[in-house]
Image (cartoon, rainbow, N blue to C red; front, side, top):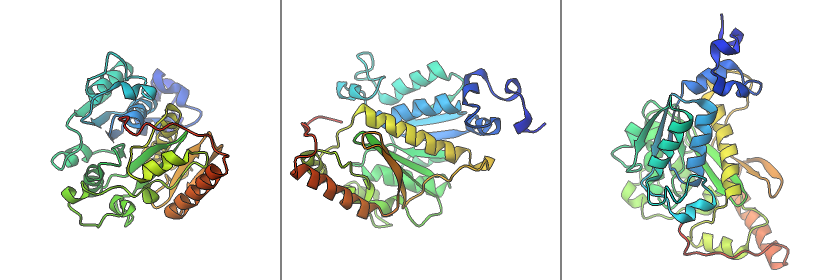
Length: 310
């Protein structure tokens, strides 16, 4: 009997039967047999990890993040509570996963991604998710290089305003993480740590409704604000791209994941979604629209607390 012909009781545990109807049993089996490595357990990373284990029941999930929860995280992460403030994010996430998917093996890297553990973090994984901070380009570079060495696709997801963007780096592609960030191919990690992300390269979607002062502060290197709507959009977009990666072997007439240099984006505030082909052109076009609308007084104004830790 083939996987496609199995009855629900034969193939799919009760926890995942509501998935059927939008994907088939053989795809669910691929999801359940997967190993997913998620670097970053903050807003997007935490919720993406929870969405993926709920959706997949993955065999193994690897988590890496050196940070602890602080009250500022609670505007967008449901698990940032008075009980988790001061605790490592990976520890809180590991406990949350155990409560919903106790059969999933969770391997924690509480030191975060380093040059010494990047290979161990990636080796044998079916998918890597880069949810590290743009301010730490050496971390993203170490992760991307390890993913290429081990032939694992590397999915990058970010929340932007009320929406989100995503792209993936194919292991054999000439369009690498370093190229997207404007870094030399052979840059050392120590040198990458001194570089600043060029937002025109890695943030192709600029919401037209944005606040001009906030946008200018971000261009100057200040941390980007983050709201729960954007995180949930990132979860929806990222989990969908992950599904496409993890079920590609089933050949069920689904579209391909979006690979760099193209991006996928979605924004419920703008009622817009789609693909972006030319990232820098789209970034500056969006910036021009935002600036024009702001100068004409057509955009809502926002207060921006640059000193707020994100």
